[in-house]
Image 1 (cartoon, helix red, strand yellow):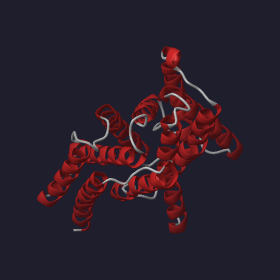
Image 2 (cartoon, rainbow, N blue to C red; image 1 turned 30 degrees about the horizontal axis):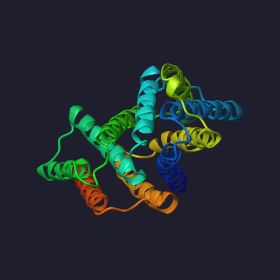
Image 3 (cartoon, rainbow, N blue to C red; image 1 turned 120 degrees about the vertical axis):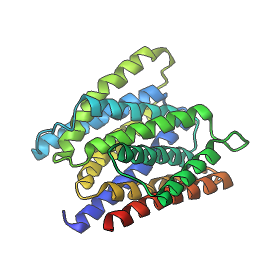
Image 4 (cartoon, helix red, strand yellow; image 1 turned 180 degrees about the vertical axis):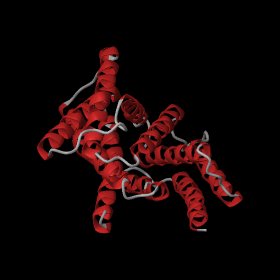
Length: 284
């Protein structure tokens, strides 16, 4: 893959990830839509747009990497993400989300036989302490239920990312995953229908999130993963919480707390230490 193309795909993907946090928080924070309906509209609109793109471009058929397992992970991520952002600020949610993503990917690396040096373990410990600092009870601590749900969303997204590595048909794979994940969301909406809350603004925001920043964004991410190592993919995702926090401050007028800054430095710095050590070991 040409380096400039890879850089463009990666930049667009990471921007889409940060925009998802903003759109979800914008919709749920203003009570324009309920979490389950946001999830359903998001996945359904993403499936529709991706199906149209796949049909118009004549892209390759979906690979074995796409299927019910990937769809279940996608739904788990999307549902937990939506419910969590009902009570979390944009930057805080993104930090917990991608902190959990990194932990998931590092644990998978350990399970598959990769060993970490003492220096790398130090970095992992710093990152873990940073998350504890963020969620520890106090005046500026985030909602505990929202924090747990966002951590679960991160674990699901980490699994989804791992399944997407090496995808030879990113558009087809993402389209199939969205299509298969949509029924899960519709069932959730049907079960919780009495608490549904829909407005035109909420539906529009969910549709934009699904069609553009999720559907197209995830297809671009699957395409970018073909040219990125797992280490590079992990490093690049670290910029998303920063982008999300900036968007939240600019568009939602959210406060930048000392706790968030400290936790961000510890989480991102700790994971960066781990990844730097892994990169150094790989070069050795």
